[in-house]
Length: 447
Image (cartoon, rainbow, N blue to C red; front, side):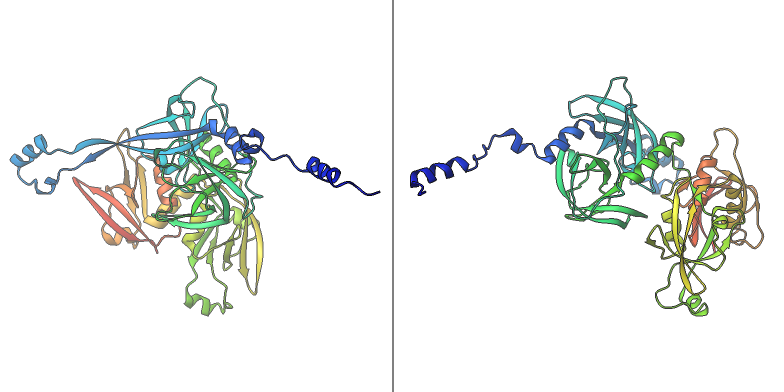
């Protein structure tokens, strides 16, 4: 049967798709829009205040009592209040906010504001500089929107991501991109960070602490703007890491340092030659396995060379301890090591460091036995100095006060614990010592 032309045209017209209207809400509500609608109300803008003192430019010339009084009256340090901005995300019904440590460090006042305009005071629950994470608590009894953290172990390079934050004070700004790389290690200021997610979603000052979402609106990472000068490169902390840290911060106010019971020395070219290591074998040489410690129970031996920690290359003893600084109690680690003539994989579980070890490491690194001062006084009294130690050679003696180590003031035993454990893998320490009315900054070798 022959079809008439007008009938064919009518059939084609009927089958043709109806053009989408530009104002069709179903067309415009993309996955990104749905993700922002879901999480946006739980994103907060963070404003912090920090009081600083500006010293007089003439303070170095005060040698005379008359001028001393004159400058005290007219040129004493001025106290100023500095403000900074950041972002965060509410992660539970208890109004805990997850953000970056560098956003709230040394803040004397913290204020958060929601997308609906509500503003609240917040207090710091705990902070962890090793992972650049902090937890705040919003001071209100009101029910607030929150988002449950997701998982980050199955992220894919190339998958789309969404960042929400407060860049340069522009509240609730949304940027999009993809995951550019996983498990990045970067150096920022005086710290090294490991295991970061790299993204091309714009992350600028003020974005720090805000959420990074996948296309489904799941919280998969926390943005951090710590890589100065980068364009088109952003970094974020995987949410699986953040969840471990959050649990520690809420319970203890800090991430409790862990140990494996290993001590190292760097694997220099001379050692490589003596040990007849093949080309390409690098890492940190184990020179002591503490009896009964986690590594001892796992089967490590003196002379093993640790080459990777959870798949990340270990370049030196210091790099190993930097990576260990991001580990929490009970975390299972996979370590690659070289022994005799081949590589092996050993699993070991990190544990809290026993208090007795801190005193032992203080003796080992600093050559001192210390006792905390009573009352409100800060610092530790040197009870004894080990003969032939570096401290003894530079003249540290009984009765001196140890006030700081590598820029960390020693106010209590927790401070001493952190400072001493941070010496692992270093070759020198800068200490602040007081004797009488004088204070001295002294560098002592640790090897």
